[in-house]
Length: 103
Image (cartoon, rainbow, N blue to C red; front, side, top):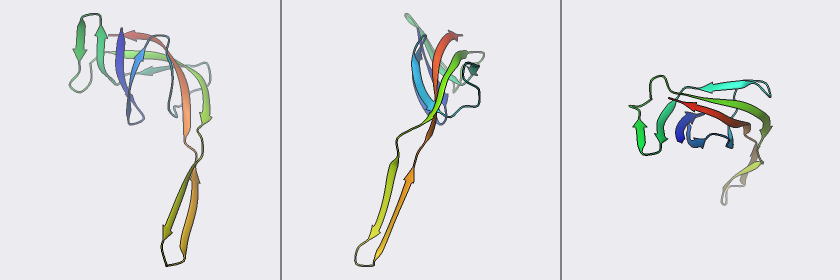
C-alpha cells in the first residue's frame, strides 16, 4: 500500500515505515504530524485518485529530526562590467517517518 502526498509544494510517494526529508514542518521531535493532503492511494489492485484531494484520507507520521541541508552557492556575474555577487543558502528540512496510511 502506498500513497502520494503533497507537503511543502512538493509531491512524495510514501509507504508505511518509510523515512523521508520534507520541507520544514511545525512540531517537536517525537510528535505526530497528520498530513491530510492525499492525492492518491493504491492498495493492491484498487487505486483511488482524488480530484484533486481524497476526502477523509490521512497519513500519520512521526517527526524524527529537524535539520538544514547542504549549502548552495549562488554566483552572479556580468562580464566586462566588474559586477560579481556571491550568496549562500541552506534550506531547512524535517525528517519524518510514515506510520499509517488511512483512507
